[in-house]
Image (tube, rainbow, N blue to C red):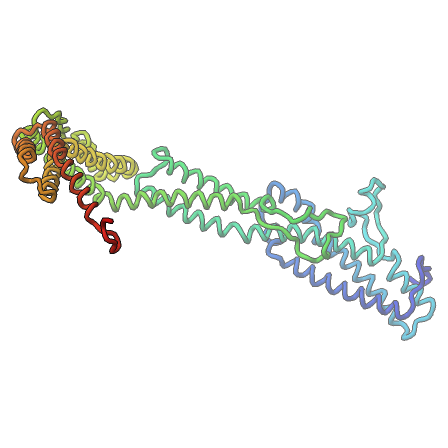
Length: 453
């Protein structure tokens, strides 16, 4: 480039040396970055994948970037080598050399094909050019921009492929295990909602796996707007793009599978505990039958010993409940755990209610005997009170006591008459009780004081 006049100021020797050092360091950094990008696993996957959707659209543009970057890098390296050759002519370059170096280092001295810079003037509506001349700094900026565009797509796709396929495969394996458990419990598609849920999860995960393979960018959430051609990304050209993998669909499927698995494990526990639980239902019914038998015996006793008493009838055994137990045993024998689960819960509840009903019947039937026992206890207590009041030998007290006692210990016992007799016996003690209380109040000195005046 001898004889080319620089459009800008002429650099000094020190400025030339500093510029060469800076541009050389940048060239080395670009070369390392391009080599790393060329070996990026995401790039190899993108090159070999059948892409669809958003990934296909983005890679249709970004996929041209790596060969273009190497072509631009070669032009950059050639221009920098030319500048170094000029600088090497003389230890102390003179004015012509400094002017040429200034043009090479800061002027539009790099020629590139016009089509190699699609982010150039033609995007603004200007006519396309066969060649473009730009400076080394401008070329570096455009390489940085293309690098960021390629790296963002490659890194995002690799992040999704690294995060999801293996996890989806593990979840599909777990799904197969749960489906095997479901089949062992008689849970199949169309026969139970859990079977339909498992089929739906299998379809969702298979679809998600296919989407991850062909369109990973559909599951990438960038932290900023994706880099576009012709723009320099913020935070440095060679920084990896920030963002996160969208795992919501995967996580939702995992939670749904956990829910189905827990329900199936409940059925598994039912299968293991069914015999014991059915035995428990039988035990409750046996206790109910024994209680009803006791109630019937007590009813006969009440009818024989208590006169004019409205004794309720004792219900019979729950035959319908026993028929349902037979059905439950058949379901258990045939391994129909889904139907057994609902039936067994209902049987346990019904058996508990049956026992409670039998106990209530016994309580109602024996109520007259309890009333008689309570009246007998009160009569004995009033008799002891009569002795303390020294009226046990009073003819009226004796007569009323004997009357009440005869009514309570005769059979059949008239409870209404006996209750009235006990009340009259109690009333006969009240005058004596009041007189005794008055005498004791008059005799008792208080705190050593002398009674009287």
